Amino acid sequence: TSGRQPEACLLGRMAKNWVYALSDIDRRSFVGHLPRSISGLDDAKMRKFMDRINQELEDYWMAPQGPSGIASRQTAWIVSGNCRCYFRYGGGVIPPSPWPACMDDLMAEVMPLCGLGGIENKAAWPNSCNVNRYSGTDGIGWHKDDSPLF
Image (cartoon, rainbow, N blue to C red; front, top):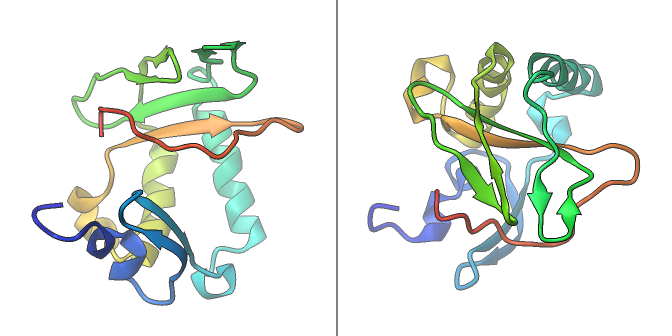
């Protein structure tokens, strides 16, 4: 955070129209919301991105091993550039997968909404993403993401 308060670094704080229902700096817990009616991300656009992500990551989905056995969800850890780091969480180890083209397209739509600019500001965008795919009634309970990788 380069000496800045954590709350000042929230993406939504750098963009317009975000509403924070929860902002607990001590617990590093934040819940921000950008109404879809403001975002311009309609159902058709969201479905298109979802379909592309599923297709372009088809060879990389895996069910991670956790403390209770193999997870019902599927995960892909995608990285860009020269990163070859593994992602470890919940007792499992997820190998890196190449950054798919669909992520650049998705981020070109989403990052400006977060105050990080468009493709001209790509260097400020995230360069890795843990993607989870759920089916049916799968889900994940309330938890914290506290991986030492970040």
